[in-house]
Structure formats: C-alpha cells, structure tokens
Length: 274
Length: 175
Image 1 (cartoon, rainbow over the protein chains, first blue to last red):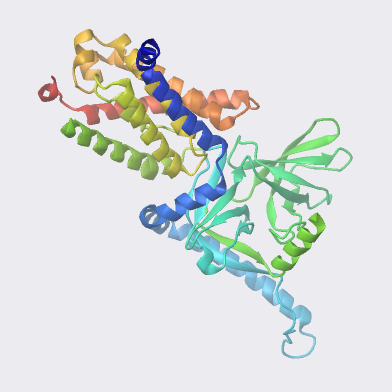
Image 2: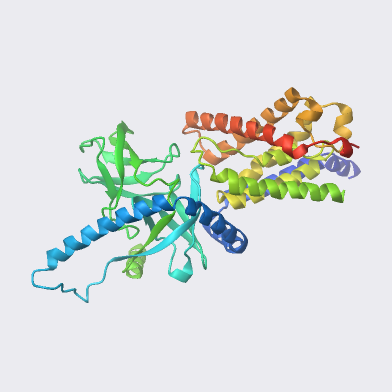
C-alpha cells in the first residue's frame, strides 16, 4: 500500500497531465453547438459588447466601400422593382394582391465576429431571439450564401459559416441544371467544392452556381459563385471547384432568411419521419 | 508568491486579449495563424513546477478555445502536451543555476541561439499537434504540412520579437 502511494506521488505530475488532458479531449469529442451557445450567452455582456465596439471602429473605416455596395444593390433592386411593376401594370396604377404574401422575408444583421483561418469557422451576428431569429435559418449577403444559424440566444446568434468543413447544402449549376452538395474542403477561403455532379452533364469553367431551392434555408437562384475548375473523382462524378462571390473575410452586413411556411414545412417533415 | 502570481496573471490576460482582438483580426488567410499566447507558457519562470505549468496551460487553452469559437478543448489538449515537456526543453538550453532562479526565460539570459532553439521546438510541437487535431484527418496532407510550416514560422517570429518587450531587464528579479 505504501509502495503504491509512493509510486502515485512519484508520477503525480503525469497523472495531473492525464486528468486535464482527458477533460480537454472529452470537451472536444462531446462538443456541441448548444454548449457554444451557452458560452456565448454568458459571455455576451462582456465580450459581445467589446467585440461590437471593436467591430464598430473597423466598420467605420470601410464605410466608403459599404456605401458603394449598398448603392449598387439599391440600383439593382430599383431596376427589379420597375421591371416587376411594369409587368403587372396593364391598366393605370399598380394593383397589389393583398392575399399574396412574400414567401421569404429577411432580417438584417451585422457580423460582430468572424473567422476564415480554421477548418470549422463560425460567425456571430448581433440579431437574436429578440428579432425573431431561429436555428436552421439561412444567412445570405448581397453576393451569395454566408451560412446557417446553429444556435440563438437573446441578442446574438451563432452561424456555421460556409467555410466550415462540417456543413454542406444543395446548389445547382445554372446552365446545366444539375444539382449537388457544396462543401468546403478547408483549402482556400474563397473557394468551395461541389461534388456528385454526374459525368454526362456539360460543365464549363465560368458557369454560374446558384442555390437549388430544395430546402427552406435559401430561396431559389441566389448566385453563389462560378466554376473555377473541374475533374472526375470517385468513379462517375465531377468534383468542381467553385470561386465564391462572397468575400467571407470582408462581409459585415448580412440578411437572415425567414421562410413564411417554416413551421408548416417542419411539421410535414416530422410526419414523414414518423 | 503573490507578486509573481499577479504579474503572471497580468501577462496571461494581456496575451489572451492581444490574440483575440489583434492577431485574430489580421488579414492572414488560411495558411497562417500566429499563436502568440504560447509566449505565456514559454516565459513562465525557470523554476515553476510542471504542476503549475499544467494548470496555467489548462486555463490558457480553455480561454483561447472559448474565445476562438472553434472546437472546445482543441487548444487545451495541445497546450497541455507542451506544458508537460516544457521543463525538459528548458533544461536543454539553460544552465543549472538558471533553472533554479525565478527569472523569466529570455534570449538575454540564455543567449539568442539557445532561446531560438527552445522556441522553435516548442512552437513546432504545439502547432503540429494543434493543426493535426483541427484537421482530424490526413486528407489534405500537403496543405496541412504547409499550414504547420507557415504558422510555426510566423509564430516563432512573433514570440522571439515579443519576448524582448515582455521580459525586459531582469537584474532586480533574479533570485
């Protein structure tokens, strides 16, 4: 017994190491987005506020650029609006159908924390439950997809970035119509990889990639990027590198997509699973 | 003990904040991520026990994990390994009297070349562990290798440069 104790005391440093290492590895293996949202919840008073200040300052420095982007978007929307109005405007004055609601509405939010240099990148937004954000909502910007909400607390929400090797979503090649999952491979922050496109489909470098609309996350046909290069991997499928339109390093303002019939679709999917 | 402890706590907080608010915001792309908080573990006094180094490493790792929003426990598990071997590495490059003093290891005290060796080995060990755990597979082995190489290089430069400012003149503190 004495010998055993002496032995244990002799290797106490190593035992301590082992003990702490086991805690760390357990955290790593069992890590969940819930845990992270709890942490954010508790940190947001201190860190969220500090980050918001720091981000405010950085945003101030790039106001000019943001203005250009906004005015460009404004022009585009104005054009679109006039196009739609003229379309319906058969008689004088526009008649709006009051029963028809838009399928998608948007909540605007600012990015207060973001990273691109890890394999699993996350973003924090300054909109939370208080503004109607819920988990599993898509996040987009003027030029493409940013990610998906994974956890929400009162004033902040947690986004799994498009630059997260653990997330994929369906996209479509605009020209050929083929669709497949887009998933980041962790190599370049401005490129992602589209796979499972059958060999017989015609692909050219420069083809546009858009959202497929096969989920409630994103509306159809949001441009995401263009085909950079493609090669055949794993038997009959193309693996396509896509240049993303959105510069994840620079974005500051995003829109959170809310789908009007979200709850309905959810309960339908639940039925399907039963 | 207490004066040293609070001094270390100050450096701890300073390095965590620097890492989180300055380094993480540098536009560096996917290849390079300087881990300057390593300096904290590397500059703990010569005579601090491996026990206390382990506790400091655990606290530092967790802080970085929480603030970097990545996978919890990632930085912690890599940093603990560095803490375990730190004393051995330090013994390789410094004299016996130095090992018993409570000064902070610096290039002024042990010479530039030995200090560089100490930092390079530590940083390489830590970065390799961290990025392998982050990747969790050897899929993009070339990319992984380059990330380890560039990150270690930049981290080493940062740490060697910063230790001049952090460890300053130490004549008064030597035991």
